[in-house]
Length: 254
Image (tube, rainbow, N blue to C red; front, top):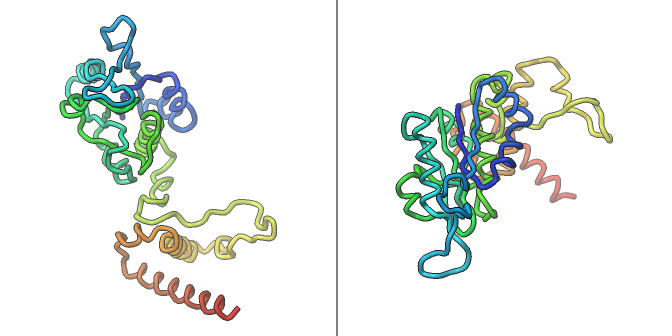
C-alpha cells in the first residue's frame, strides 16, 4: 500500500506516521507513505501557494497550479493516474467501510486542504472523492489525512499481527465492540464478568456478541437501524430487550 500526502506540513505528518504500528509497517515494507511539500511545486519565487478568491471574501484559496504540479508528479512516478482524495468538510463522512474500500485501491493520494478552500478547477480535474471526518471544520486537512492513512494502513495484510485484531473491532461488523477487561480481576470494587474467567470459549463468544449488540443498541441507534441480524442475533436482541424492560421496571419501582 502506498499513500502520497500533499501537505504544507510534511514533517509533522511524516513524524506522526513514522511512529508505533504504522511506523513499524513502513520499516517492514508493508506500506509506504510519502509526504510532499506543496510549496516545492510552485513556480512562485516566494513559494506562495495561495491567493485571494475571485468574487471577494475573507481568507485565501489554495491555487490549482501547485496542487496540479504535485499531483502530476506523483502520477508520473506511479506510472498512471492515482486515486485521489481531498480532505474536505464538504465530503462524505469517513467510515470503516471506506477504509476497506480505499485499502483495495493499492495507492492513494490524500490532499490536505487549507485556508478557505481549494480552487474548484483542481477538484474537478484531479479529485476522485472528498472525505470528511464529521460535521465540523478544522484549520487544515492534515488531521483528517492522518486519520484516513492510519485507518487504511492498519487493514493492510501484515500490518497487524492477525486479521482478528480488526475483525471484531467497533464498526467492522456493523456493531460496536464488546467491553474489554484486563488484570487485576477486581479493580476499585469492580469485578471482571465471571464468564470471561470461565475458559468456556463458546459462552465467552456468545457473551461478547450479546454485549456488542447491547452497546450498539444503547449508544448508536443509527448503526443498529442498518444492522442485519442473523437468527442467533435476534435471540440475543430479545434477551437484551427483556433485560432492559426488567431494569426499567426496577428503576420505576425505586
